[in-house]
Amino acid sequence: MNIIKMLKGLVVAAIISAFSMHAYAADSKKPTRIPVHNWSSQVVMAHVIGGIIKEMGGNVEYVPADSQKVYESIRIGDIDISHEVWQSAFGKSFDTARDKGGLLDWGDHEARTLEDMGYPNWVAEYCPGLPNWEALKDEKCWKNFVTPDSGGKGRWLEGPQSWHQDLMPQRLEALGLSDNWMVKFAGGADALWAELAAAKKEKRGTIIFNWTPNFTDGAGFTFIKFPPYFDGCRPADGGDGKCGSPDGYLKKAVNEKWTKTHPDAAAMFKKLSFNTAQIGAMAAYVDVDKMSHEDAAKTWLKKNKKVWKKFIK
Ligand code: TMO
Image 1 (spheres, rainbow, N blue to C red):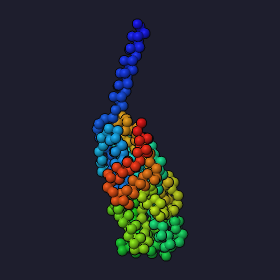
Image 2 (tube, protein in one colour):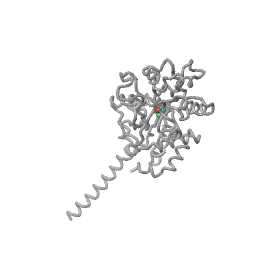
Image 3 (cartoon, helix red, strand yellow):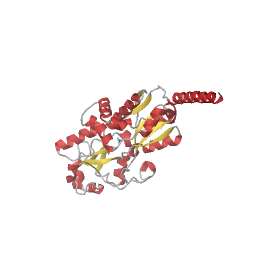
């Protein structure tokens, strides 16, 4: 009798605790706020992650955000996650927010990154010695990169200034190249790809900012080899600026409170990791195949079920 009572009690306790555990683990229905920036893989991946969260029964909201200020927004809880923290462009803003508290490092993607100046391979013939940066010193080289808007100097077409501020003008200066080279900032990523296409058509030299993973991976684009990066080499970090960009991480970040209100989504997002080919494909659907970001994400999710289902426990 006593034993039966005891067993009954245990069963009831087990049911109650299982039930309450489930109640605690269930995610809040409050939308997870995902930032949207201005390069293709980031926007597609926002919708990929949103699609996974919806599949798990959650809600999402896409929030257009500045790609530097977003880390402070996550820290104070205006945005919940960041899924593409590129080390070269955003590492410093990320570190600052993490050190203040409220934003957590949620691990890295498998993909490594490079964000730097480069050229379509056929341009190498204009500058013997490329991809070594010292090839840019030669007048026979830089003369091929003068454009109507470059004041008689060779032109580097940088991305929007919101990505790196004055990193590239400072680098030209530091490497003693600024007498013969200048930086023009593109209005958006699309201007970089339009420049690639135009240079090819007109058979002229061009040097643009680009990155990997991207749709240009394996499409005949080469990054210039600058003096190696080390911590502190940039002027913004107190260095002399004579360095290229790092072999960088691609990190994820979260608001600390969101991990408590959305534990299932947080567990999924911690496991989530994409490789170079997967991220390149997200960008290619938009920049090569001209899909909308939403359609690109839907297509990617459909073709990669095995990849993302593994992130859901
Ligand atoms: C952050 N970005 C991929 C544009 O270099």
